[in-house]
Image 1 (cartoon, rainbow, N blue to C red):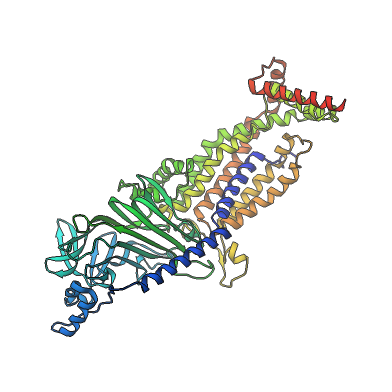
Image 2 (tube, one colour; image 1 turned 90 degrees about the vertical axis):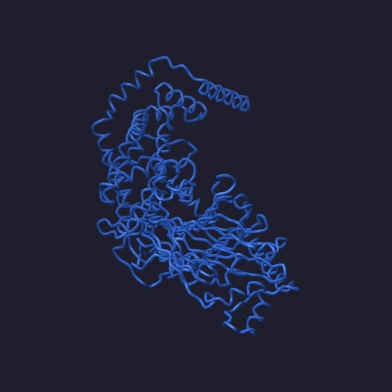
Length: 633
């Protein structure tokens, strides 16, 4: 019956999308060779560390502690350890303390110990469990500079006390943190926070240390950080947590999504420690000559509650300028939001995983602005539905062309069957006659595939858009509490092998609805395609493949999307319902098979001039037929 027909072109679209997703998942897994290479690399690193600790002749590593005023013995011991920087250990700041920089958007707590940020809190956002969003807290980040003095001391600024000084520059808060040799000689970290801004100006400079810092030895900036979990799904969040960086004048690259990865890059202008929906980014006015970066996946089992998802490290060699340190940098602590990052005009929005090539272009310049416009005056869930309607209406001409092609093939099927019966013992003649029929009728078996391929960039772009749309974060719709995460109608705590790993410990309703919609859509259209596609000798039985796809595709979506953003499942649910409606309208009111049949007969009656490709194919088939006859003789 006609209401049980399959649109193979749409299935091809689904298969291609799912194939890409599976390829991305599989290709991101480390091979055994990569694992062995990484193990060998780690062994080399450990060996280098041991060599560094044993080869320390005439070098003293600083492990300083505060020195009480007037304690000459302790001061002498401190001078033995850190040389001229012992002066800093006698200042009040050596006993600890912290300074707060705070505006409407972000709160930073800067510690006297190391002079760096020990807490970074988002003032306007909370985690999935309603706790504050901390990008840095409880020692998960380490930042500092390592250098050697001319008298052989190795100084790690993270271990040294900095003296704070708070001032104002207009409305800006300015914090100077100085590691002092004396009042006129010091290493300074300078922070300047502007009102209502996620970006903090940060500079590193030294004064009067040209006779203290040994410029012939490596001077290294180190930035290590464990990435804190912020979202409900550990596996989902970890998938979009990646170290991203810009180098060589604008190239954007990322470290591996899984496992351990490392790179040494040149001319690095910024590094983003992306934490799914939040990022802290280090920028420089003058690109770093080189940067050694690593990423390590800390999630061994996504079914187990975790605190940290990834660990990032960066090592940057610094050079003295006029025998002094002078680096103009900036810190960004804020959301991974396209609208926010775009304002800084530093290509920071390229750190958002919109997708590669045409997919990223569609998301950046079409879907992101469209959704921003709709959500500015509509509830977020309704905005998704309206956007879905707009997309499906814009794609309806493609759907129409696909159905016209199917109708033509259906009308021609009896004639194709006659040709098959006439030349059943001569496959070459059969193929020639079939191609001639298609050519005269103006039909092609491949014509229906092209519309499906045209839809692929849209489908995949939306697949990338919803998980990265910051505007959806913690926005509710119907039973979904957060459109950027999975919705839940039932959950359990018991870990069930295989099920928990691939499906999760919960049931999401939107993927179920989307799967049901896909099932009925495919069930309704099965006969249409089977009626239009002739069975080719020597080719797989497409009827069996299509029957399997009716059940496999919905099952795949049911499992795969259970842990994905509910906004994405909502889109597919509404999109499939609309597609079914558009199909019914096209079938009932637009496509007239009798008229199509009459038009085909008119086309067949007209002399059909072959194009170059068709003529070449015909000549090749004639040659093949001639060779076949010659072999038989």
